[in-house]
Length: 423
Image (cartoon, rainbow, N blue to C red; front, top):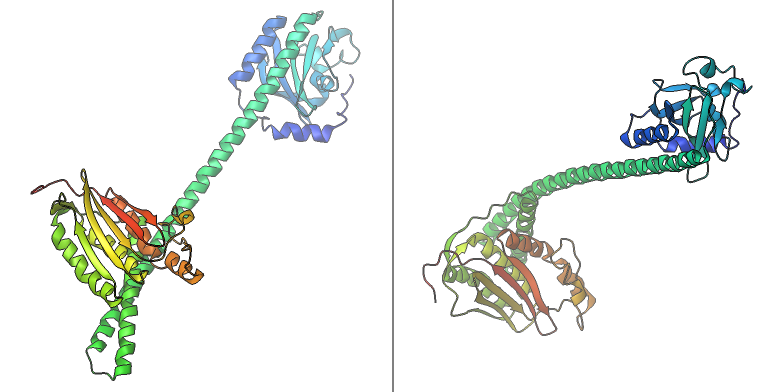
């Protein structure tokens, strides 16, 4: 018996075979169909898809044979992978290379063998698609061509199989990354909420303390410094309140409480807060209501006041002169609040990300870079929180325009549901 030699590129061939991750896998219909077809074409009792590793031939698919593998030194297929084309033994009993092979002298009693090598795309043979009979035969050229065509299909199935495995691996990696991202976001949200709550509590204590100190006698310079401390404390309190709200939104812990309310009373509250701030900067402050806007609306009054207060404070803060105006109009069941200021303009290329957290927005045209950074960063959290609150209320907050003359934000909310009166 002649022992088959190793392939000239054996190491590369084995690496290619192992890369397919097919050895010792379960039977698959797509491969079994090809072996059955090969058996039918040749009318042989045995057909195999045989893969040759470093010590055995392993059968991915078998017709008429129960064995899962055989030693490589006995394998006809180990000889076949050394050929460029078909490997045919018409009568192994009379062939000195195989006549004393245990696979010939004992079961499965191989006598006729025809194998077509399974050539990978890199040109290396991995095994064969072969047919076996227990009696001598002559190979028909048309049958051999059919066997070759079927061997190409075996490789195609192996290529498809590895691509599907790669896609599945990528899908699992994406799922893992998604879960890790969700865990990280949850951890961040918990941290932000905890930090914001603790920060809010501490700043609130400072505000109360500075308020108490404010009512005690001071010399003029001390009184001025305390006024500054009181003002800054309130600003920090606003920031911490926005951070707390934002973290609640991220944690899906904000509930929108809809109830009927008076628009006039709500706007009176907003005016009491914003008018003194505008007046301190010599800005005029006006609220205009269209005739067709009803007074009784339905929505979350607390959140509405919060958004209008934030937008109004930003308008005042960045306006050096001129007017701050809140105009209220109606569009079907929507109430639109148009907030116009005469502050720094925001360049159009930054409008898209204006409501994103940590976005820096440059003001444009004649304003200096310091103003650009200031308007982009100051109240960025308030604006992001206001946008999310508006969306939770089934509405939206948008920048309408921003020029040297004026900047306009529009808050649109579906507040007309239960009307006690209409115009």
